[in-house]
Length: 443
Ligand code: FES
Ligand SMILES: [Fe+2]
Image (cartoon, rainbow, N blue to C red; front, top):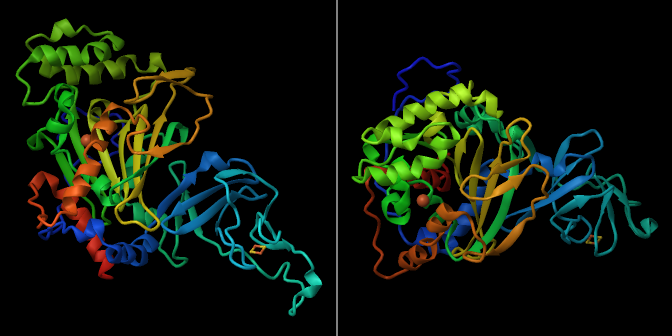
């Protein structure tokens, strides 16, 4: 996809990236079903990658804390007195009880519910019952919670379970630079859903690594975007992250009925003071017209598009961060999708869905992306938990979710001998290749 006209702030590099060498990938069933494979992932993958622990905004004041589970491990993130973010393993060093049992809150210190040991926000043991009764003397001031490496980026608190890991920014390269184009720090989470799902975490991630399913799973999307692989750019980055740039602002080449495309864009065109009827017979011109109009009228609507290339105003910029984040960026919001592994069952995962909205200057109410509802800047967002199918995820993501469980069933069948991947599914192929490189100790 080329950007023909000169760009005001060419911060993002949309050029096709060099392709790494890809090896055939069978996607054997054991990757999705076996406990042994899950254990190897825990030892060699999850302990070796940077992951999101929580949002910085969740722990904005001293004493705010959040717990986060990854696999069988529980972690606590807390803002200390100096305003620094700290991370601890959520384990009391008296007899091993899980120290913090709730999802978050604010506290001056953490009190273990078993024998009442009190741990400070700086991780230091502050108070115990009967300190004189310990053979080595009072343990206070001598014991500390086990720290977890933390860092911040894009409004998220990131953690790494290996204290000797390389820097977060190196791990995220070059995706971090591209996402910095957007204003993630100003975005507010407007939906927060976690669903226990009867499928391996990679079933979910695979789905968000390919667009080959769009015509069948999302039949209405063809009127909004050009989903054909020939006009879509797929990039595979050295660290295992990927990008997909898919043309929006026009219908798919598969669409013969222009009327449907005009109907699909009617509201958006009207919002930008354009009339769909003017594009009858030339609907392929909607994309450029929208780009021009957004630049012209954006500032008056509280939206500054000067930092974006034209494609970012209409197209679908979709990323994965290895191993389990998938997100789709727009100047006014984004969707983050994260399937986390289940603590014990390889055929289950915990699927997080977060919508973020960038409220235009002076606007407190705004339509959330893909949820077709108005969200308000100051609304408290509850954490909704349930099982897959119980909570609405937005029409598009619900369509994706409708295939997860049935695919898991197929992958555990005796008849499953391996995948036949198309070239346009090579982000799936590459992700599994990188997983294997971690499991084999080559990364
Ligand atoms: S295990 Fe925490 S106080 Fe005993
Ligand atoms: Fe999809």
